[in-house]
Image (cartoon, rainbow, N blue to C red; front, side, top):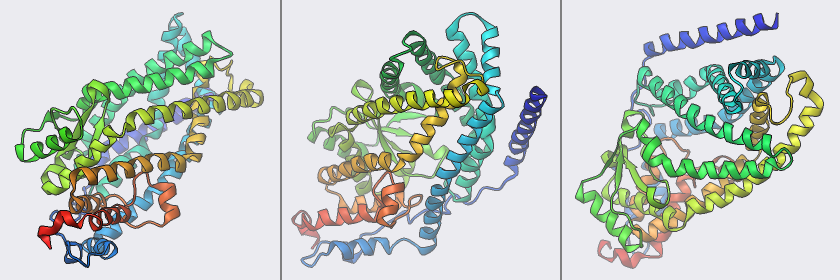
Length: 446
């Protein structure tokens, strides 16, 4: 009876999956410029250098350039993500409990053990089943968040077919990388049953470092074309800033993000020999030279301030604490429901939904802490970028463009909980405050 129930629910889920797949291409995408801020952002009179320059007035003048309807839509989009954090968490909890209480996880374990006696293969086969099943179960939520909602707010450019193709690529990457990590962690647990949580945290951090190292060269190109940028008008000022700040950068890279999104962005990825400073083609097409220099100065700040290495140390500490919490939570759950769920112990692959459940609870609770850590580093990079590029107006223009999908003026508590970057208002004010303290650099504009 339980097996029939499982088959029936899987059948219904698959039918829903197929209906969405067939019907999605019939949905008309919203205009791609629905949320776009003005492409050309002029320096307002209040923000021009003068003996009476006021940072607050300059900030308000920049914000006044944002059309009211665009600002309302971007606020609605960003505020909607607050609820998605909750719904994603609750949906994940429901899926984990479904796999445990209906013993689907135990049955996937039993099936993997019938494949071969080689334990690592058991683990990988279980991971394959788990990943495919949870991908199907999460698909309705994923297609709403990643496809329909992005098109509704004019932030996506892909039709359903190419979007689905990227989802399949992501599934393949998760299958390989997740399978390797699962084999490593379960191997540690089985060989070190008492101290697994210590060594497991070390393996997790090392694997994270490995992933960050290979991502720019081997993972990102799976989804996007990355090329060296050859436009001297763009590249020369960026490389000049890099040399002036002791950054051994020889190239600037461009990524064809416009095939997927209208978002303007840049990033620092990798570290050591695989470190790359990359800007996307949306920024190139719509950003002013001053804006591009300000953005790239920010990204150089991440490199010079060693944010990647600081992140590694932060996540090492956090991961050790998370594994200690995981050990306690698993022992407690085993005493109460281990027999019901048919989980033999922490080394049993059937424990994975419980592990994901426990970690997701922790992640949900510490969301403000994680956001504060990232937001603090972003603010440091902002300040570094201003001092490096000396383009406060370009920086303000960049903050407005990012406002296409970020709320510009949140309350302080709202920003502390939900923002992993400083708000647009605070970023523009920081730029104008910097300009107020460096008016002599703009003497010719007075």
